[in-house]
Length: 321
Image (cartoon, rainbow, N blue to C red; front, side):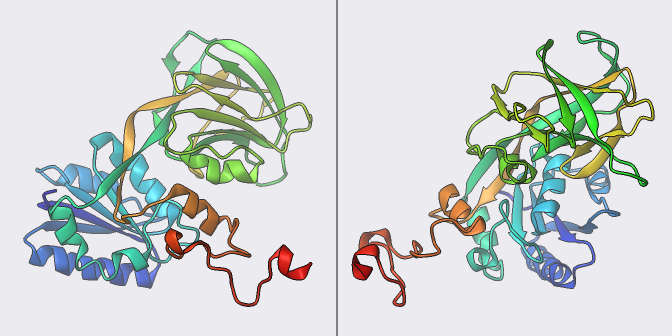
């Protein structure tokens, strides 16, 4: 990988993340790279400036923060095929980010990147757009929105909690009407986010699929459904004269969906690219660690050849019998 033009993004308002960004900028500039740096947050979006102000392609985006910072990077950079090195600095769960234990102070990471000693994980994304008229008519009334985790269709009001009634079509065929708090349409990556909190399935990110999950439905028969990646999911808000229904992309407000409008959601044409530095990277280990599975009794972090490392103060069932 060449490191001629690099952008560095840090979590807005986080001094630890900003300090790491300054350190990375000094290291990369010492290697001869041109660096652009800026904050990312609810009120900060540096990506349009990055993409419009450089005459040469961006070789790498270094993203320092948590999953929210990484999601924003994917939404804005995936279409330009820019690889993302996301490091968990000032974040929480860190499903999408490398830990600082793996990267160290990042001093040796640049040599690995220049020597192509890394892997690239490609993740499916979604795109959405609102239209007026029945399915099959494409009179667009909004911009195109992208998401790495999920698209969420639900109402929002400053005065009250609103129950939504949403009709869903898949490839033009009516499937169900959901009454509840809203609807999630997620990628495999997003199934470990909002979707799993809504009792949806966990789907391996190596797959390409679309998961539709109702949020707190009023009917026990309303269940999640997993679809092939080529499907188009159309969502219509019903009985929403006040226009409270909104489209949210990775938790960020996208656009309002007014009566007689629908939102079409499908697989995006481009994939997000995340750099993997951990040599023994394991999705299942990430699940065990982040969701606190399995390891409450047995520590699987040791070498597999020596077998599970059973804590000294724990006893197996046979010890107690």
